[in-house]
Amino acid sequence: MKISRTTALIGLSLALTAALAPIAIAQDAPPAAPAGNGSGKGGQPPREGGERGGRGGGQQVNLESSMKGMNRALKALKSAVSDASKKNECLKLVSEMQRNCAASKAATVPAEYLKSAADDAAKAKIEDEFRSDLRKNLRLLLDLEDAIVAGKTDEANALIVKVEALREHAHEEMGVED
Ligand code: HEM
Image 1 (cartoon, rainbow, N blue to C red):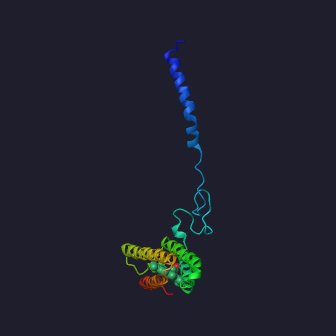
Image 2 (image 1 turned 90 degrees about the vertical axis):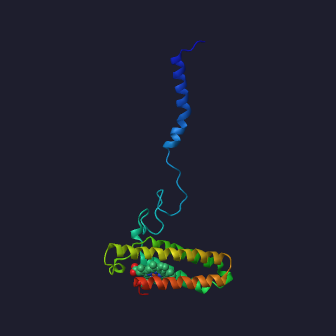
Image 3 (image 1 turned 135 degrees about the vertical axis):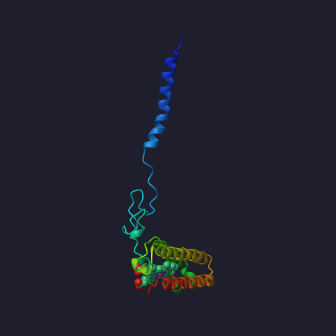
């Protein structure tokens, strides 16, 4: 049978349309929902009662309550860290500290701690120092977690002393009364 060029071209394009249709449909489909991680994405509400307000909601973090959360967990950790039978409890507490430290780092520095700054550059310096100290603190807390996992009690206690010293230094620098 003799097929004209036009008929062959129409046939080919029909075949291509049929072959590519599923790809087009797949691209139009919404992406699979991510496993619930509490980040507020994919329609999931943010975990902490909307306190953080999802992406870019750093300003809504309550610094004082995050700091207090960090302190509460540290207190409990100090009394449990030398007891090998409380390892799991200690791991939960150190994670709680890390979570509160990260939340504090995302917060806006309250105006009362910026009022001594003469200009915007001086304000930015205070904010930089605030976040830099919290990054240091978060690193110490990760090291503390490693020490607890490895059952290195002396190391864990030494890291707790460092966290307390850093807290003292940062609070003094900023004029926080605790
Ligand atoms: C390492 C860097 C740190 C920085 C830059 C920092 C900074 C601050 C700031 C600015 C406040 C005042 C919050 C407000 O008035 O809303 C505050 C309060 C507080 N911080 Fe920190 N902090 C640090 C580490 C820590 C750590 C490691 C702890 C405890 C483990 C801690 C416990 C507290 C507590 C309990 C308060 C509340 C004080 C009160 O109002 O009663 N902080 N901190």
